[in-house]
Length: 344
Ligand SMILES: [Zn+2]
Image 1 (tube, rainbow, N blue to C red):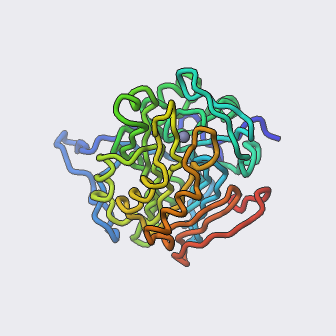
Image 2 (cartoon, protein in one colour):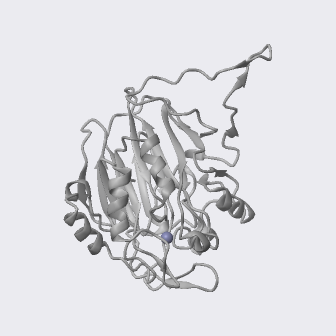
Image 3 (cartoon, protein in one colour):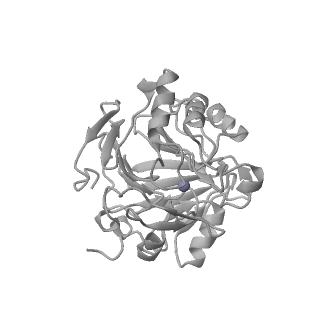
């Protein structure tokens, strides 16, 4: 049993993660535009603000195999696609475990994670929506390898750096990081998120959504949106304007209430988000795991059905694997024993 998971394949604290100017200088000092983006099936995205290189043991072409989402619990999933393994919002507390959400407010976990922290496969980086204990618990804080790259908000990055994490990578809203691993390429762009109504949001950690864009290697990209803990709010409208064709969305729902105030989307807002963001397919996560989650997954399922959107939603139990993309370019759900994650 490992005391902590290590970054995959020898990621070290000096991972190449450097701010890159959007406009670069030519040798003669003249300012030049960045190289034209490769042609894709979509309008070109803005150039990245940063790049992050994950060391890889191979530079062989990335095999065209389906991607997978392995649902661990809360907002913790393992995303595997195009050679990358990404862990989101790591929370491995057991049923009965308590989290502190600030200002003396606690909540108790009602569910078991599908696997233990020690069962994780090698991970390339952690994608963290915000620094709340139901997304980054105190055990994870103790056990996660200090060299693990963590992509998150500026607020979380400062706090994690102070806790000794050596590879923190801050993204302000709409900032974009390009991640390279051997021949594989992907980008992450920070999406707007609002963890509560105006006054309440100021008391909670800032949150980001994420747009993950995987280069399929054939001129197309696979777009995966992760909402983060957010309410439905005005700024979300900008997401479908900039990203009109999202393949898959992971929606943090649960209708979290702190002191009676709604701070994450409930069933009704989840349906509205589905309509607004308009992904081809969506998976609700962050449901039923804590006592502060007041809107059950079953309520979202009913609301989706009433809205006639059932075909676009997959409901995952903890331990399920959802497959997408790859040669089949289809989505399907496999139910597998939680003790044997196929994402390893
Ligand atoms: Zn949460």
